[in-house]
Amino acid sequence: MGLRACVGLCRADDTDPCLIDTDDDGVNDGNGQGSQLDLCPNEGPPNSAAGELLDGDGCIFLAQCSDTVDNDNDGVTGFSGGDASCDTADDDSEDTFDDADNDGVGDGDDLCPGTTVEQANEGVDGDGCHVDQLP
Image (cartoon, rainbow, N blue to C red; front, side):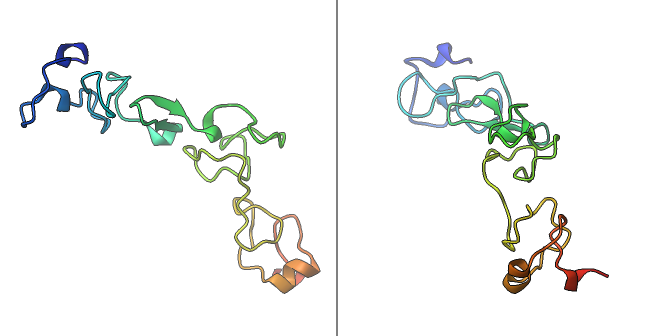
């Protein structure tokens, strides 16, 4: 029973046609009233490996790190393009620079993620390594 078919037919028991999730994305088809309404009842669950995410309306969209747009204007486009701020294809925060050890080299490119504050202050190479961390 599709979206339009359940309008006005909602019941408060487990036979309620408005509780159906046609595309199995976790958002019920709804009845056109209230807060839960799947505006895209035929799109299905998102494919996170392809960078797809699901919005609150049950519609699939591409994460910033997979939308082929340079959202943070750093000259590098998304996860597949090597943007250091993209941890995965479904990362939706291309403008966030992740640098856990604060050495100025993004976590995705940092070959020495355990750099100390003192080492970072003394300087690191392009791989995020201080001279003391090199073989």
